[in-house]
Image (tube, rainbow, N blue to C red; front, top):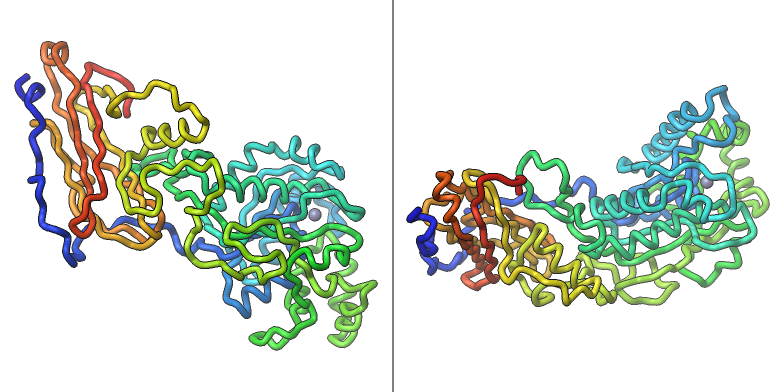
Length: 467
Ligand SMILES: [Zn+2]
């Protein structure tokens, strides 16, 4: 009983020596760099990637940019012009044809959304048939996983041409995902972290704001888009590959046998000179010269016709004023705030104008005595740089800090989630009846400077749901 009524006992002395230049903190995992992209392309169907491959090979081979491709559907509908398989079996084949095309381009990171081929020019049909919300959620997740600076998708608009509703859908979803991925209150379960090793629900991704959004057209007359964005020659010779960009884009397209086997057969039988003549012929060539990427928007400024990577830096422009995006604490300053559900609700209430809703004065929770309580921490970095921090925890007497205290080296990211874990004591029935809420206090500092503190009131109870 005594231990419950005791005032908070500092576990560590309040005054700690500054971190100075010590580098012995525990390293916290950062994001998986194998999946970092510079350009993320969203296309509707297997083979649609060919609409932008002349630009992609330029960006990859000569600018060393990393590219991710996301397909909306598996291309399960439509005919099979090569063999007998249809429907689900055709989808399985087309996924491999698409992956093969990407592999030939040198693109390994390829995902498929859960869209369903929808034969109509009405984007609303496709959005309905695909499952708009579910696919948007997944696309936001993939943006946060791959952290691209540039997003490219099919043009959301109606023009004479194939004008496929599925193509337009990628433009709608990419635009919505571009606007949402940097907002921590959009699909917040993807952002939440500080999870124990076997956490099965939370993704521990960071919010991510891409810098620029571009589109490619699906019309009969692409010349009408001249001047709406940067234009790149498809005929130019790649300095590193010594071949024209169209040629580097053509070979990977030869994998789509179920879609245009006759063309592939014919092209494979042509001499280099004959292929070149065909591709330079405006009536037969696959690509319009030059290829225009239609400018959608930029959060880093610049003119629509600027180069795709103009003004783009490696740093995530999360600080960009995009309106309506909640910011906890002092923007631009390294700081400690509450993470987990408490941090989420703070941002959520702010984002939705629910500022009159009652909130606990100090964040609080009741948990079963003898179980572990955790305090989720969110550390905002000043400018996305790596930092070394020290946390100290004050817990009630008899409670044991089992994790999250000490020195940590945080990766070069915008935010890092950490979790302070504390084992609570088991209590007798009598002790439980008289129990009062106890306070846990967590402080963090970097280079001897306080990053702030967070508090959690905890009431030990006879039972209850796990935290
Ligand atoms: Zn298509």
